[in-house]
Length: 136
Image (tube, rainbow, N blue to C red; front, side):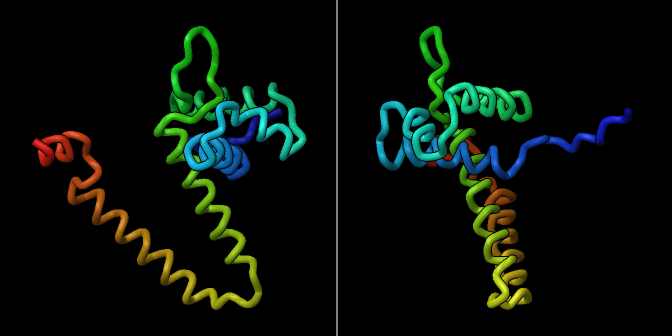
């Protein structure tokens, strides 16, 4: 049986939103053990959280803060950003499915936001080197 073609990165929106929840618990709420809180709120096991982080790491690289000799289950900067992208995508899907939303206006807002982010990136404002040079 042929397998489906994988697109890269092979992440689901669900994986990204769970990463977003871990980020929120870690950085906004200051939880010391965000995975345990997530397990209780979602009714999942620690193994599910570990496997999810492993799948995401295999697709895009390490997304956890480094730990001593064990996994931290706490997102690093990449994990936090990917989680926020998932959260944004989830919100946009929710809005797009709302029958009361004017789809043309939503599309224009998405295009404007994308254009602004592209300009910001192309201007080099996201480069670490440029930011550290400006501070010196």
